[in-house]
Image (cartoon, rainbow, N blue to C red; front, side, top):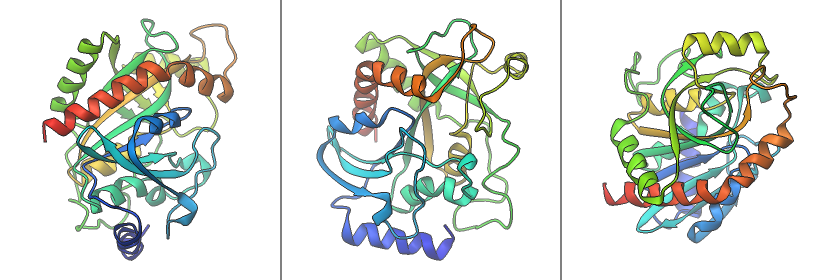
Length: 276
């Protein structure tokens, strides 16, 4: 969305949809949509009913905007994201981030379904991101900078907020949910990686890999939002095990991990609200 479209969409949601200004925005990855079941005072709006907003086309991404509360925290949940491999312009890929910021959000929690490269990960494990490697070959800030969004050269020395990570670690410990930390490799897709590519990523220092998230993190840091990300390991990356990869398995593993993912994310959001 361009500047004018972003304003139109922001005005539309503030006038016609939002009852309260959201505190935290959440973007749900493949198969993680059922998380919205735990939100109270829930209101929902299809992406198709939002002016200027892109449409999700990938199975497991429902394309629904949800508002409501978790504890005392007002949340804005994007149930479905946009990917460059769908053919979206990168300004559309990061539209949820920029829209959330214009609606008053200061913190963003991202989620995704990733392939595990680290040998300590097994499908169903949860991982919080400490850093990432952008191997997509592109960046959502290409072109003339919009100074109303952020600086020409944003700092990326702490892409994932350390204070948010500490809160997440404490929540996981209290809930007795095992969670790993890791460096994420973002690739363009839509093909899964080859075994040789996974070996390259391992040598480069990546622990997990996926086809989303990095553009959103860049856009969020550009707008001075605090960011954290929880990944669900849904499969071994190519070459780790002698297994074929398919999207249906990704969704199935995400659903099987939903109970612990839902508990962790819900309590994490509630604790973030207490620390505002």
